[in-house]
Amino acid sequence: MKEILLLKDGEIVLKGLNRRQFEDALKRNIKHSLSDLGRFDISSAQSTIYLRPLSDDIDLDEACDRVSRIFGIVSFSRAAVCPEKTLESVLETAPVYLEKILGSAKTFKVEAKRSDKKFPFKSPEICRETGGLLLSKFPHLSVDVHNPDVTVYVEIRDFGAYIHADPIRGAGGIPVGTGGRAAILISGGIDSPVAAYMMAKRGIKLTAIHFASPPYTSARAEEKVVKLLQKVSRYAGPMRMYTVPFTKLQEKLRDDCPEELFTIIMRRLMMQISERIAKQRDCAALITGESLGQVASQTIGALGCTDEATDMVVFRPLIGMDKQEIINISYKIDTYETSIEPYEDCCTVFTPRHPRTKPILKFVKAAQEQANFEPLIEEALNNLKITYIE
Ligand code: ATP
Ligand code: MG
Image (tube, rainbow, N blue to C red):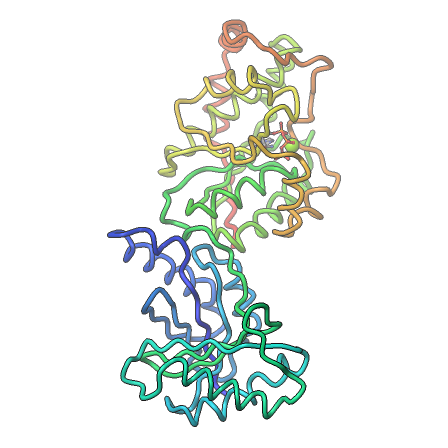
C-alpha cells in the first residue's frame, strides 16, 4: 500500500506576507534532513505539506523519526494513499490500513475533510459510510464522538484521498534559518546544549564556540562537546564548531588577576572572544546556558558584569528555569547521558575558593585592563580549530 506523510505547519500560518519564505525554508530543511533516505516529492497546499516518497524502498519509519525533530511542524500523520479518489476506494483502503490500530482500540470516530469540493459526497456522508463499514469489519468497536481511543481521518484533497489515524506530535517552533544566525557558547555541561536546542526552535541557525584549555582539559572533553552538538544538530541542522585555545589566557588570568575575580573575568573574556568570532560569521547574537542564581557567576550582578563585555545581544533562554526543568529537556533531546560524562571543562580549571557573587564592574574592568589580555586574544583567534558537525 502506498503511503504519504502529511505535515501540518505550525506558527508559519501566522506569518502573513512572509509565509512563503517560511514555508520555503521548512521545505528546504525537510529535504536536507531526508536527503540520504531517497527521493521525495514535497509540495504544499492548505497549510499542509505533502511528503510523497518516490520509490517503494524508502524507510518511512526513519523518515517519521526525522520529521518529528524538524522545527516548524506542529503535527504529522503517516497516511495511506487510496488507489483512486472515490468513496469505494476509501472504503476498501480504510479497514486494511487501520487494521492494527483499530484492532487494539475500543472506541473510535471518523472525521472527514473534503477540500476538493468536486468530490460527489459531502463530509457527513463520508463519515457515515466509513464509520458504518469499520463497525461492520471490527464488531468489537463502538463509536465515541467525544473521547474516542482512535480518530480516523479521511481527507479528500486535490491530489488524492488519504486515510490516517491519530496524528503524531511534531517538534513545534519555527523553521531553522528563518530567525537569523547566532553563536552558542557550548560547554560539555547539561545547560548549553539545551539552550542551543531552544534557540534553534525559534528559528535560529547556530554556530558553536567551545573554549578548551589543554592539557587542563582533555581531548575526550572536546569529543564530548562534539557528541553533544551532533545530538543538537538532529534538531538544529548542520553547524560549524570553533574551538578556541584558551589555555594561555587562563594561565595569565591565574597569574595576573585577583583570585576572587577569576571566574567573572573569564566569563568576560569568553564573551569578547565569542563576539569577534560571531561577527565574522554573520551571527547577530550570542547564546549561553546561564540560569539565574545557579552558580556565583550567574547572579544578577555577575551577569551584568558579563554582559558589559559585549555589545551584542545575548540570549539566555534558560534564565528563568529550574535545574530539573532543564534536565527534563535534556532527556527529551537525548543529551543528558552525554552531558553527565565526567570530563573537565575549562570553567572548572583554577576555580577560585571564594568567587565574588556581587562583583563591582569598575574593579573587574580595572583588573582585566591591567592584565592586558589583547595579545593573547589575538593569538587565540588566529589559532581557532573548525569542526563540521553533521
Ligand atoms: P553548562 O551546563 O552549559 O556547562 P553551567 O551551569 O555549568 O552551564 P557555567 O559553567 O558557569 O554554567 O557556564 C555558563 C555558560 O557559559 C554555559 O552554559 C555556556 O554557555 C558557557 N560556557 C561555559 N563553559 C564553556 C566552554 N568551555 N566553552 C564555551 N562556552 C562555555
Ligand atoms: Mg559548565
